[in-house]
Image (cartoon, rainbow, N blue to C red; front, side):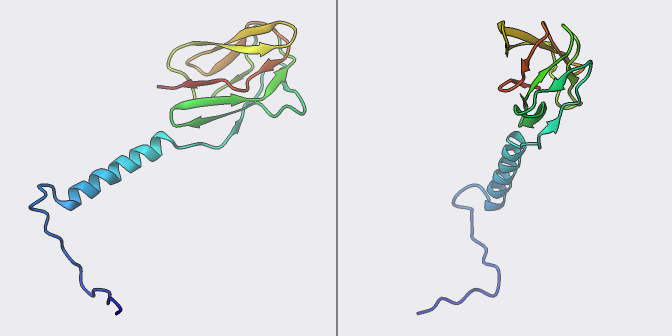
Amino acid sequence: MAINRPTTKTIISTTQWGVPITDAVNANTTDVAALKTATAVTAWTNLTLLNGWTNVGGFGTAQYRKVGDMVQLRGLVTGGAISAVIGNLSVGFRPIVQLTVPFAQNGVGANYLSITPNGDISPAANGYVSLSGIQFSIS
């Protein structure tokens, strides 16, 4: 036996449950929208390199993106001077306080980058600078 599709809206009484269905649906819609915002992923953006820094061929272009409120960096750069700004992150991708982030450096092992609230990314030493794997929260 086939079930015919109703031609009018069926309204379900919610008085026995204590919460109207529309309120519950709206709350879930709000929660889903907040979850989508919290986990939204932006496209990778090329980092404009400054002060003689260049991408190292074969290791990917220096880039950044945001996943929710976390910023991720990737790429390998070289050629800039000690403490010279590598590049500048766009508004919306900058930390709220200055960060000191460890990174791998050729011949030295570990070193650190400074990432400032104005978006400047600067190394403590020159050489190859790996941006891959660096991530931080902007909130």
